[in-house]
Amino acid sequence: MTIAKMLKKRKDTVDAAIKFAESRKTDKGTLTDEDYETYQKMEKEIEDMSREILRMQRVEDLKNEFEKPINTPIVSKPAINTKEKEISFRARDEYKTAMIGALRSNFRNVSNVLQEGVDADGGYLVPEEYDSRLIDVLEEENIMRVLGTKIVTSGQHKINVAATKPAASWIEEGKPLTFGETTFDQIYLDAFKLHVAIKVTEELLYDNAFGLENYIVTQFGKALSNAEEDAFLNGDGKNKPTGIFAAAGGGTVADTVTKITSDVMINLVYALKRPYRKNARFIMNDKTLVSLRTLKDNNGAYIWQPNYQSGEPDRILGYEVYTSACAPTDAIAFGDYSYYNIGDRGTRSFAELKELFAGNGMVGFVAKERVDGKLVLPEAVQILKIGSVSAAKA
Image (cartoon, rainbow, N blue to C red):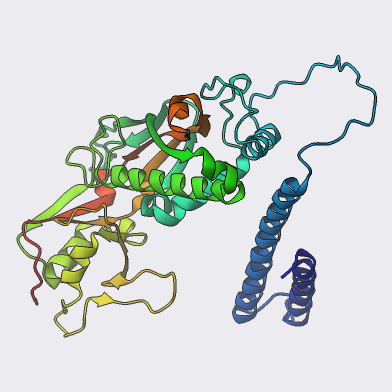
């Protein structure tokens, strides 16, 4: 479908949504719950079409760039430009122009010296379009970025946590008041460095310039995602984030068992305090989930309920289940993961390393980021330790 057809389709959908809302108003001037739900679906369809139109326009712009002639004849008298170009500390359009020019010239027109984050030396920061696409890949692949709370930090980030809370007590008439002790702790989100680098042959750059851009961004996103998820789940806090399964700084160990039963899973659910249960989910390894699929409750019903709607997670005892290959096979987590804070420090950097592999006829690319993650309330996530995973009926 062309951009023009998409624009017309979006306009028709907007008109239909407005007409629907006006025609469905009650005597009070409002919509019924059913009509409002239908109207929300129409709004979602409009948002999806707007996002697709923007994507198609970006692709069209890239195609137009590649269709431009490499050499343009000089038709006017050369003149000296005395106006000094304004320096930008965050490269956006400059980066895209330089990147396209570098690809088309087989990287012959870029600076020979590259330094991270220094525009003058060729180390351009990732522009907003590239950075957004990396984030898209991370959120699709990394369950902790979906469930956790993401924070963008510019320095060491302090999170205040109430360590102890005041308690009320009964007193007799005329007796003196008793004062409890309330203390506060601070948790710090730092910034640990994570990077991914690849080498590409000069022939590939020359022959397949357009497809290479998407390949590099996608592969970098997946590599960063895998490393992040492993750290968010299992990291020990040494030069990496602290994971929810970490022995120190992770969730609270609710119980240790030798085998999984339906009663054990029920006890795990109720080991989590009621306020956290309304947003709670399970996180486990796929191999662990296999042992849970045959378990039944006391009424003979399976505690695992598959979800037949695309994109929706399965459930155990009514709670959503997220699986990860990085999750340990000897533990299950259950809790509210919004209390796991992920701190992204600044912007990811993207650089091209030409001299390092020049002798081999290759060019290197490297992406770097700084990130930290911590569980700010250990009681918000309960951990079930398993000695040996095996299925058994309650």
